[in-house]
Structure formats: structure tokens, C-alpha cells
Length: 471
Image (cartoon, rainbow, N blue to C red; front, side):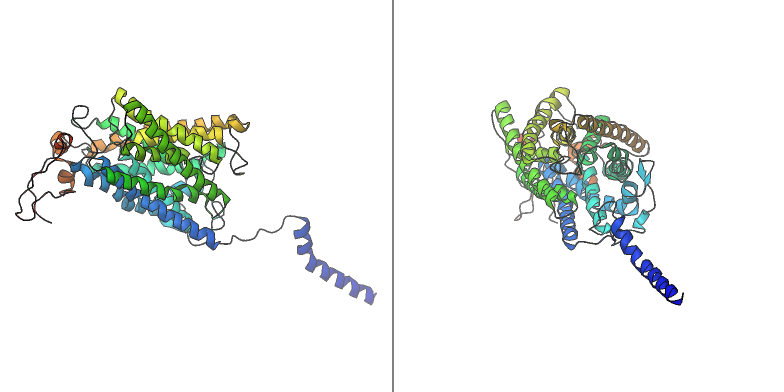
């Protein structure tokens, strides 16, 4: 009996020691804690830096398209978002967009002020990068999106009203839509809408909001009767080049790792931008008789917008087709539709971002392939017609929500402050009336007197030279 008890004791001891190993082998293995990958982390941080530079690049793109007297005003309207929206994102924007889900509509305030958010990964979004890396990457998206809207209302919005608008809009429009599409539990994400890097979240809602804002405050003084030509196209091309460069971070970075999906997104992004550059220039060459530098710059942006929701879900040939179609569609929305309908979308934010984003979101439902990205879905051309319906729901919802909320925000701001500059302020220019400075000091350095500026008849209508002093 003594020997039996000894043997039984040894068997029980071995059973207790081996049980976890056997259970792990036969059942579900215990989940390993998330582990940071240094390569993925470095990649996402670099991509965040690339997206950050896109906002001042947008300032240059818009700045060159504006008239001389408004160049600083439009540049500041982009640049100030780097400050205002960054603070908003840290304090409450991130938690509203990506915090723990509330009824599939909004993130909770659990992470307000980034409380509890640190260097550990959040597996809900990425198990290989610190959550703070995800915070800053998504934050630079939140910064550039309201800045896009300034292109629709350039040359006539007072600066205090603009600050109020972007702060309210980021909170009430961008953050909820970001949660719907990208947040864990968001209803459009659960429904199956595909948006790799921001067709709905960035481009549709900014473009549509810009159109509503422009319609509500009315046209610029002299619109349709005065020449309002771009004052500095080289500046615009520089901005477009930097946007194209930064867009690699925008789209490839949305893979949240240095991997095959990021590579696909990088190449589809470049391909679509190149194709749209060609198709826009060809379209305007045939329509107007001359190819233009502004057309090439606008075309590349159109292609980048169109491919954004599809970048990590489609093949390279599909990106080529989407870019070619998108360049032509956006050209006609700017060169034909805007003129015939008579609305004043100053720098074509709606014509490029609203129209291009909508086309790209819907086209994703046709061209997406699960063979490219197993985390996505097949589109119509791969046997799944239902995906087109899902994309239509995502785009349509974004349109309606952005339009209604923008209308309410502008109405509310108008109750407490003046939004649109009066005629005299617009004639003098927003740079002087709103900021007390000029982008260019035309002065004879020898005598200190104003220079007589030899300009073309077109530019003569755009430039008023007043006495200035050297800074």
C-alpha cells in the first residue's frame, strides 16, 4: 500500500505539471502578449511625418492658386490646423474617434487627454506598434481633413469664424465618421464598407462640407465678372509635388506595418496619381485646346484622392483604370459642372475631393479583390455585387451626414459672429484686413517708394499696390 501511494503521488504530481502543456497542445494555445515590432513602428512614425508635411504642402498648393492679396490668408488656414486640431485630437478627438465603442456610433471618453494611452500596443488596431504611434498617425489625418475645406471658401471667410468652424467640424463630423468607418465597433466598419485610407473619412466629408459652406456664405465679390487667376503656379506645383510625396505615407502607412499590403498601397497610389495626371491633361487639351501646368497639378491630386479608399485592396491595373477615369471625371466636374451650375468652389476642393472621393469609394466596390488583401473583400468584378451596395451606403451616409452637420455648424457660428468678409474687406484682400501683413512687399529698395509693377492685363486686375514699408 505504501508503494502504491508513493506511485500515485508521483503520477498526480506529473499530471499537474504536464496538464498545462497538454491542454495548450490539444486546445487553444494561450495568447501571447502583443509584442512591438521595431520595423513596423519606425515605418508608421515615418509615414506620420510624411502625412504631417501634407498640410503645409496643401497650404502651398492652395496658396499658389489664390490671388496675391489672399495668399497668406489661405496658407494660414491650412497651417493653423496643425496647431488647433493637434490640441483637439490629444484632448478629446482621438477618444471620440477610436475610443471604446458606444452603440456603434462614437468612441467613449475613456481616453480623454490620452489618459491610459501609452507605449504599449492596442491589439484592436495594431499589435506591433505602440498605441501612441497609432495616435499620431491618425492625428495627422485629422489635421489635414478640415484644412481641405478652406479651398472651397477661400478669399472670403473671416479668420475667427474659420477657427470656430474647424474646431466644431473636427469634433462633430470628422471624429464620428472616423469611428463609423475605422473604429472597432463602428457601424460602417461592421457593415463591411471598405475604406483603406480615407475616401469617405477624409475626402468625401471634406469636399461635401466645403461645397455646403461655400453655398451658404455665397460667392466672392466679383466672381464671374472679374478674372481670378492663380497668382503663383510654381508654388502650386511645389505643393502638389509635396502632396504626392506625402501621400505615400497617407496610403501605404495605413497598412500600419512595413509589409506586403503597404507595398501594394504604395504602388497603387503612384500608379493612380500618374494615370490621372495624364488623363486630366489630355481631357483639358482636347476640351480647351491647350495643356496646362495647373491641370497637371490638379490631375495628380485627383488620382491620389480616387485611389485612397482602394489603395490596399486593388491590383495595379485596377489602380491604373481608376486613375484614368478619376482624372477625366474630376476635370469635367471642375471645368464644366462648376461653371454651368455657377457655384463658387474657390479652389475646387469639392470638384477634386468630393467628386474624386465619391468615385473612388464606389469604384472600390467594383475593383476590390480579397486576393490582394484577405482583410478586405471581393468587389463586383470578382463576383461580389453586394460590395457595391455597401460602398454606396458608406458614400451616401458620409454625404448626408457631412452636409447636414456642416449646415448646422455654419448656422450656429453665424449666430454669434460674422463669417463672411464684407465687400470692402474682400477688395482690399484678406491678408491685410484679417492679418495685417502682405505676402509680397513691392518696393524700390533704393528709394523706399512703391514700385510700378509691370504686369499683364490679367494680373493688373488682381493686384493693388499700396505704400508699404520694409519689414
